[in-house]
Image (cartoon, rainbow, N blue to C red; front, top):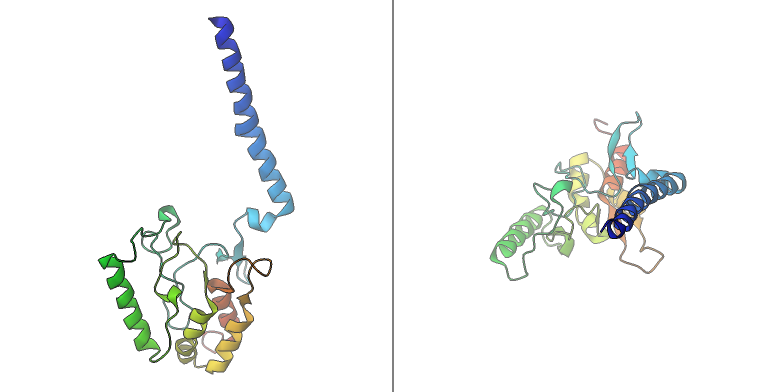
Length: 192
């Protein structure tokens, strides 16, 4: 029996060290050397070096002077520990009611404008940091009013932050909410 057990125990120990320690350490080392910013969470810092967020994880912005992200179904909104979609189908009464409520609020904010789909729908992860350029432009009127700035200037900031599809053809153009909000703060400083 020992002759059958010994190879199993040695194999388990070997693969534990190889795949549980050596491989993860090697991948972490390569990631830190080749892509240090991405490996450390794509963190964005302010002028004083304080972390203000990540370019990869959405966060809630509720003030009128900021670009708002798409709705989140993750916990209480952008809770990474509860990352998931709502799993509600398109005919779910709760989903329809929520979307109607959000659409009505957006119509009151910007009467007569078409409401982009991502303004009322959640992403699959609930943590999406990006919105469509159409939704970003939809919000320009509110932002301009709250900041006391011309709408054309706010639109220029938004348009300067539009990211093209990955490799030119994968996905859709998008706008990173945190990046636009940082650009808005730089262009129209608070209190000035």
